[in-house]
Amino acid sequence: MSADTASSYSSRQDAFDPLLQPELFEGVRSRRIFAFFIDAFVIALLTMGAAVLVFILGIFTLGLGFILYAILPAGVALLYAAFTLGGPAAATIGMRAMGLEMRLWYGSKPYPLLAAVHLLLFWFSVSLLTPFVLLVSLFSDRKRLLHDLILGTVVINSEYHRGYVRDHPADS
Image (cartoon, rainbow, N blue to C red; front, side, top):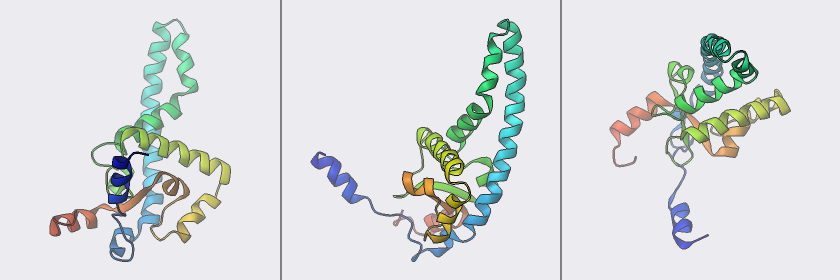
């Protein structure tokens, strides 16, 4: 590791302290569950729309396009996460509806590749550890899940964060 890289890591600090700003994490766990159901519904709608396009593509390619049906739900979910969670709002449609946003541990917004990896780790951890993965949030001070801890992300109350940044411009 070079000296420049080491100094950039040492200059970063946790941006969201649950002891100093507990409002950032109020209701995050329950709102995150509701956001998941909203996002699952949106992904289902997008998948149905994409299925029509794949059907038309399958007809034009004499059946070859029908192979895309095998990866359609996963592909739609990955693109959805990459473009919403990794986008400028740093939140999926469900997260925005519930007043949440995702940030990296040092305050930066996630990028599309990280958002896609976040989704993959979520599904991997849920399928491997089923309900036990959700128990991690009960013991985490920032109400983070296992995949959040691995990737260094945190889900926060976006309304409080926007108000705090507006009232304390020097701190952000």
